Length: 513
Image (cartoon, rainbow, N blue to C red; front, side):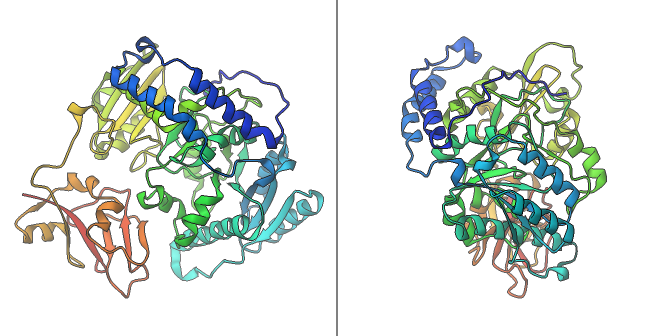
C-alpha cells in the first residue's frame, strides 16, 4: 500500500489574494539561494548537468515573472460534470463540501441530460449554498446514430459546454478545476491545486495540473508529498488556465474522444501537466459510460488516494521544466542498466536500487503488466517518454529507445538511412504502396511518423487539423470528401500494421530499401 512521509502543517491558510504572491516569492528565493547539488547528491552528475542546473536557476526569475493572471480562489471555478448517477454525485459533492476554503470558490454542477434525481439534488444544493450554481448543458446534440461511439460524442459536447460557460459566459474566471460526478476528492485536494497553481501560472511549458496518476497502484512505493511532470495528458480532475481555452482549444474542440485529442502533439505542443505521485481523487465509478464493472475492479479500484489532510509540499521549483529534466537525466546516468526481459525476472530482495530499462513500444504492454504498471498501448505517465515505477524498494526508469530524447546515446534507435516517409494513395495499404515504389514497409519505423508534424508535412490536414483515432491503418489523412471526418489527420496509440488500409483514408507509410 502507499505510504506517506508528508509532515503536518498549520491548518490555517493564507488569504487567496496573497496565495500566489507568497508561494511565487518563496519558490523564486529558494531557487536563487539554493546551491547547486554536489555530484554525490546527484549520483555522479556531469559538468553538463551542472551547467544545465545553473542555467535553470538563473532563468527561474524570468520564468516566474511571466505576465499572467494569477490564481485566486475567487476567480477559480470548480465544475462537477454530472449526468445520471445521483448516488455518485452525492459522494463527490460531499467530499468537496468538506474541503477547507471551498466556499471561497465558484462551484458549478453541470448536468448533461435530464435525470430527475440529479437535477433535484443539484437544485437543492444551489438553493442552500450561495457559492454553488447549477447549469444544464444546452449544447447537447442527438448522437444516437453514432452507435457505440455516441457516448464519446456526448461527453465531448458536455466538456465544451462547461469550458464555454466558465470562461466565456461567466465573468472573472481565470482558472477552472474540472472533475466528474464519480471522483471523490482527497482531504488536501484544494491545497494541492493551490500549491501547484503558481507553477501553472508561471511556467509556459505546463498545460495543466491534474489530481490523477494512472500508475498509482496500491502496491507501488509512493509518497504523498512527491509530484511529477507528465507529457501524457491525464485528465480526471484537472486544472487549466483561461488562456488555454480562449486562445487555443475553443477554436477546434473535437467532436468526440476529447481526452485522447488533448494528448495529440498538435494540442499538447510539447507541454506537460503536473501530477501527484499519490492521486488527490478516488474514482468510485464502478459503473459508467466508458468503464465496465470488470474494468473498475481490475484497475481503478486498486488506485491509491492520498489521506493526509495537510501536506507540506515545500519548494516546488524542482518541477520547473529544466530542473526536472536535469534530475531525470542524472537519474538515468546513475541507474544500473537492465534489459526488458531481465527486469521481469528480478526477485525482490529488499535492497534499494535504481535501475533503467530501455524498451521499444512493442514490448511496453508486457513490460508494464509484469512490473504492475498500467498495461496500455503506450505509457500513460511519462516525461520525455520516460516512465517511473517504484516498487519493492526498486526505482525503475523505463525509456522508449526510439522516441525518448533522454535515451543514453549508445542505446538510441534511429531510422535506417534508406528510410522514407511516403504518402500512399487513398485506400492503398503501406505494404502495397512501398512495394510499388521498389521498397518495403518496415513496421518498426511507424513510431517515427505517427505524429501530427509528420502528417502535416505530407498532407494538408485541412480543415480540422490533427486528431486521434483507434486503428491499425493509422497514421492517415481522411481524404474521402464523403466521410464525416474528411480533412482530419489522425494518429493512434495502437501499433500500426503495414497491410492495413481503409477505403476513405490515405496512409503515411514507413518505406525502406
